[in-house]
Length: 369
Image 1 (spheres, rainbow, N blue to C red):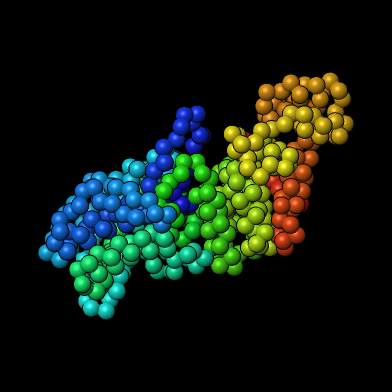
Image 2: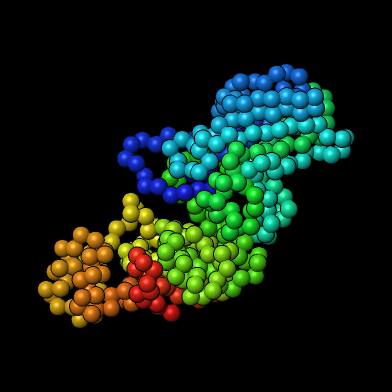
């Protein structure tokens, strides 16, 4: 997946998946094409760049334009089969020469955000262009300028068409990235459903929360449980970490970068998997164990007839309904066991954990503290 803030979730298809290119790789290729044209060589199409791991992809140009002292090139991002919100977006670089001694300067064009909060790898006030994409653009700029015997005093303005609207579907507003998307990527390659991008976003969310001095953060499996917990504790948006299915990614990072208090909130099925010891709660990578639920119900006093019904249940929701009818507080037991898994995963890190189980409407079913 493309690096974290610009990501959405989808179920993994059964067919073979096609990889794609990060926004950063597209920006670097557009930079090379525009600078080549500005230096008098015309627009290379396709334009080839070298990625951090040595690959040499070629990118067809979707747009090219020139003025007296500038040149611009645009590339349509192909994220392969990854469900990235920037798939199909036009990523453009507008290049112009700067006065001697200026060096390479990055600028946020339309659709690229600006960093407004500490804790991210880019400083406050800077365009939201991450370190590796910056390095890739610097390298192509320095190489081309050196070949012409000129100093690399160049302004690189990156734009992403419709980026401000697309950014509303990402983490950027919570992370304090205002006005558009981030230009992201660490290898230049998008590996579909690699999960690394989402986990990367969780890590950056923790970094921002720590930099803001927050003492309490929230990791929720979805928006409904998040709203319930956020309202209960009156937490600001930047305290809300979009944990999703990646409980392990959240807990392991907090192990090394602790925040004094963590609330985990989620639905009964997702938190049952955490209670069972699973740290990846995705339906394709962990399953609710009906035998485990039957054993927990038995420990709460369920009779054999009831545990038999649990074993035959099709879904966790059906188990929840069955046990609720019998007045067995299975959600409380699940919340307690999920909290135990979280504490064990933290390995003694100074993080106080509580767990909230909600139903699909957001009603609080159990709270383990």
